[in-house]
Length: 131
Image 1: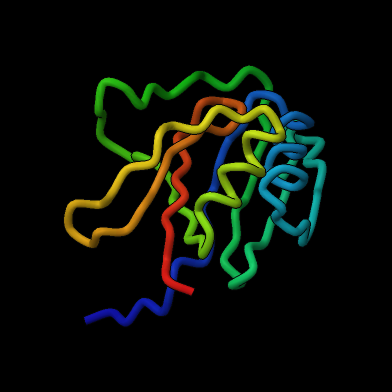
Image 2 (image 1 turned 30 degrees about the vertical axis):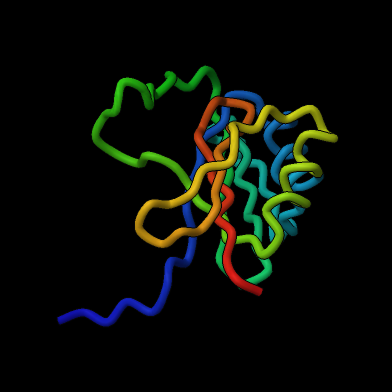
């Protein structure tokens, strides 16, 4: 049996590199680890870190096709970020003009959560954890 320690990174392809870079760094507050222009691919690769050390790789490619998430389709459904103060994080997103869905309660854990989207419509979740 394998023993996976934790999720190291998730990779996201964006349609507008500058817009997505701003969203993930300025609005979500992720820290830039490395940023590389891959000339042969006409693309950027941006490595971003969350506070716990997990990472998001942000890629840009010329004219990437869209990947529908609705109706429910096979594949990645959303990315979820753990937060200790859901209301403060919602207020921060809204102050930056990000639309946030109404808060819901997880029927199995009784924890509060909400969804919003990145600039390309990728569903992102804030999941409130106890401090």
